[in-house]
Image (cartoon, rainbow, N blue to C red; front, side, top):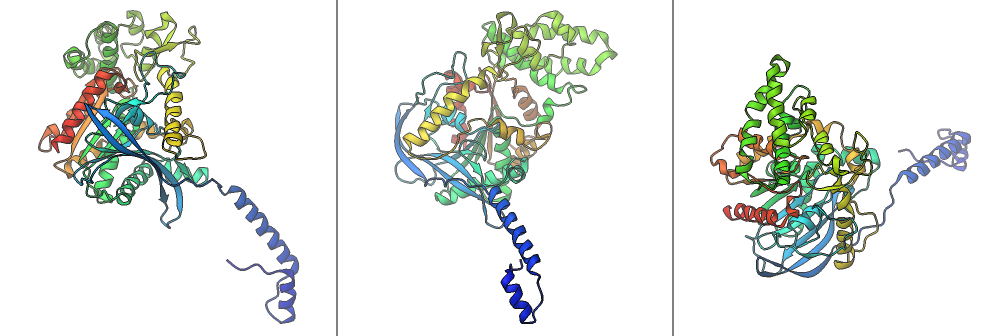
Length: 508
């Protein structure tokens, strides 16, 4: 960049016979550069620095054992290709106290959204402390009270919970449009989060430890994608992957105008919700009939369409029995009951709304006469307050990581800013297959709740059924528990989930 020349310097240049520069041009140049500097200063993001990492000693009790551990809240930088820091990612780590054992695993946990912080896995499913949320009767104004988590994994693995950019306190240091390009796209998301895992391992001297990745919902998409990226790009070999209510392949819920697949994957979860309302136990035996029907006669009759009028009658008869909906409604929809209608009708006569994350969790409907739902989801509306309050209090008061800024347990702004059409196109089944193929010792657990219509369990069942065995087919296992998207809010389901995860870790 050429240097600015003052008006006086221009006159001196003329008197010395140097290249002439008009004083008026110089003055105009100075004004333009001044305006540009002001504009740049206006656009520059000025944020207070994050505090240094903070730690606190804590105690929890799991499976009859007393566990002493250190909780750490801190941040790691994200840098661009030139080494410039463009974001800061916040993590919460729980490390068991005692002599360093290089054989002790470390697990990295991500939630989804996109736009969700890791608080849900942390303080709901697997962290050392928990707060109740996600079940029928939970309220946004319930007391913020952390208790020992009987379902924690801390007795068999250290835990690191990572908040992607725009969630929790994690933040971009770039302008809005550049932030979208660098962080709110599928490939970039996997790349920088994988690098955060790598950087945490290096910073904490844990490269020799067994490593596991766990993700919930869209984090369930992230988990196999990050595992494969770590394998192939960063030289880190995960020992296992756990997916909680994962969103693995958007294509299983797309093209419903011509494809039967969306209705096939949703019907077993709709039936499970109906069975639970009838008091039937939710287990493989109870769901066997509807699963078999969904993958056989239902699929065939749906594909026949109007070429076989009798097919519609057969569909309506079966779907009415499985879902418990009114026969005239099911007939009106041709047996193709999408989740929106299913949830709207379940409790309409009671003036209540059902949640897409667990269709038997309800709240009052503020507009019961409206044809369409005009209120938020019963579970989402109820979990933001307790999880935000609990996590912020823990980080800032208990651990002492004093930070300025807003905490985003679930950011709608991040979700809206995500790359166009990701919801219709994203899939990580390819990464799952490649990661399992690349490592004959890698083990995978896919966990779902029967009542979840946001990420139906039967979609993952069909995906697993289509995977080649690659040696031992038991290396990729599906487990389904009573409950919904956050099935771990039910103690029995959380306990069963913990047992299955312990078996996966022990198998290694």
